[in-house]
Length: 73
Image (cartoon, rainbow, N blue to C red; front, side):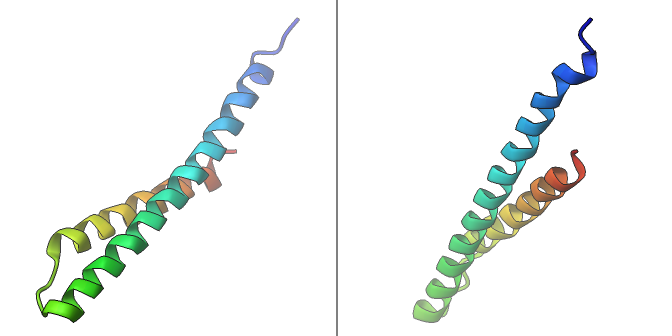
């Protein structure tokens, strides 16, 4: 007979790898947004709040996704 836990193992592995990919993509987006916000501030002296806010949200989501990948085993 097939063990139900053995069929769930590939799904868990896929979720783990997918959360690693999503976490890295979110952190990359956060780095780009923060860099743009800093560049706008340096060139114009105006704080680009929207880019900074997207960067902070992306950082939080990236850290959560990477934490999910670490916990999900």
